[in-house]
Image (cartoon, rainbow, N blue to C red; front, side, top):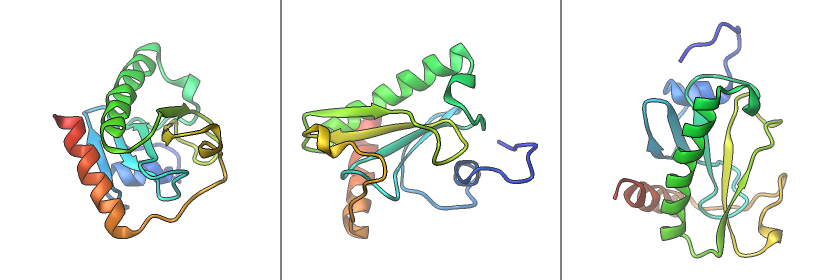
Length: 137
């Protein structure tokens, strides 16, 4: 998953294994991992492995597949995290690499870009394992 730009995005570095992540799901085309600055416990990012800056620059096929991948990950999150819904957000300004935010929410106040909570390393590892298991089940 290389990029012709001299500076690949942080997500490309994660995809290439240059930076560690808390991976919860992966296919040949997509990767899902826990956000390092989560809005809520279980906040997960779904990214295409092909580096594309803008979400709507993905091909129709990639958008469809990313949506279906994100749905499967969201269903896994919902099995693990006590929430009313898993909210979906695409902002795309934080990292120049298309990505989908999946955020377990109880109320609208739980979904706020720029807001983050602290999650312990042990809890993060527990969430990663549980969501990963729920995804592959």
